[in-house]
Image (tube, rainbow, N blue to C red; front, side):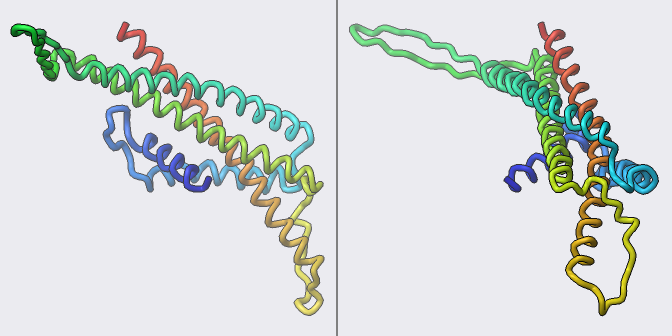
Length: 231
């Protein structure tokens, strides 16, 4: 599973750093720097607003939204798969022209197959098909990455609620003498670290989910408009 998730992440990075024609628009380091504001905003919101946990209304609404998004995004990926399949099929079928000539000599029939490449008169149409295919690939990758983010976020919210540590405030902990440290202090420290990471990730993932939802919607719009232009 880690292999496929890593492959999906690499594809997302590829489509975020290249345009629809395959030209590099920015470096991978530039992409990492562009995500820092999302992380910084998540940390600030956690420290000043949600250090003692998320409100129950927020958890209920956010969990329902994530569950609905997972279903909608999974269904929409079928459309992206169909678009990619049709585009690849069209590209392969339109690349060569095959003609069969039948000649008869006495009682035998000889079939001559001529495989000739088509000319480049429709190069503009081929470029349009390539762009449509790239948009469809972008849509599938961004949608799949969004599904992964929604699933992980939903699991973390349910996990914290299951063990009733969603209202744990790690900022109320304090250091004690090293000689009096026991398992209770170690467990409390581990819970504080976990809930801090969980809350920051939930807020950080919220921004990314909105971002990639917009990216996927834009790619879908481009796929539809390119199809209408080709007709």
